[in-house]
Image (tube, rainbow, N blue to C red; front, side, top):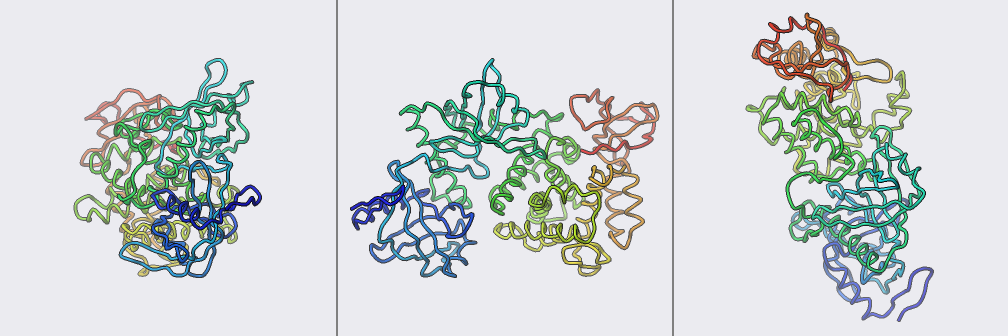
Length: 560
């Protein structure tokens, strides 16, 4: 039997309840919604039903909620069946246990289910690592590229470059939206912008569109896309569980980056910078994920840390220069990548085990992303007093908590890099105020690498420092930074490091791209502009650079 309740139809027939639950027992068939404010559906596997008695749930993908379920927090199960959204009444877990590497909960059995007839009310959100490009077209052949962030039968949300604002405001008619899936599927709709939010730091706009004049065929395709996005999102949340079949929509035809997307149009001056930009793109997306739900994607972090190690092993100097070419990326992304690359180079490639190097790189990449949750006013403060310092400290705990689900990552390395990078030898650092012997060697090294990169970038209260001034400052502060690591840093990267913009005695400006064994310029690319490396780069000089250009006279600070 069925009876109406608000927008839902209540299903009370035991046979119908059993049948609907059976259809939810499949990968991507169910989501879990906790009974608390601002909760959102999370991936769960409904693995078995004992009719009239209990449900068996696999919550491995969201194991962090098991403690809340044990404490009696209520939840609903959500599913999409035959074009309808289905939900259970409020349920509670009777038990939660760990079986091998799985976390399994048993809940009471629902006496009824509720069906929502309005399919468009369900919105499928793309998880980190799921890339669907979008092309937006307006009047007079004007167009822009972006990325799909969520989709429903009613509309979608796109992330677009900030420059698209003129296109949004100039068109008198609905815009054409073409979605481009990794498997080569293309789908076109008409849509009108309904709301937008800007992100100045990321130079991006989030724009919500409402679809217009949807045909029956388009609606059927949209519903298929929504289900496939949910299916892939559930699989992606399972730490690579091969038991969950992937959606064919997200099976790319080649290993090449997608040809459509907001970041695809960005230009980078070197091949290595273009490859590093893929890692930057991941960190940019991870920053948003952290802001939305406080999570760090274990699988994606592992993949991109591996990618960074591969680039470092292939050509460390080209990678060092590439970190100076990402000036269009958010500051927290640029800084994290630069610290990670310099840590890898300073640690060396032979004496340190690969798993330790990977953990170092991963921790350094994300060590500052927690600042993305802090207020813009705090991050742009001209001075830092006791109150501002207190507001700053929690960003460390935010990242460490996010990394706690990354079981492949050494917890001691994460504590040393993320937790120790802001500590100082005299105990004046944060978050623990650790001093001297309390600091691991890796924390001491990380602190030096971090502060060198930070001082070479513009900050709200000061411009970027030249490397000479940075070195002198650190050498004068043996009570703050380990002198051994300061000296090792200088020996490793030289007085004119790769990535420095240098004025030579002959008057030319050039970016140092490689050093010889004596840490003197071996390859320089000339430029006429004091700006980050871009399309203004000129000819490359290799070999006897000093003989051709004269001695390097000074570094010209450029915040990149």
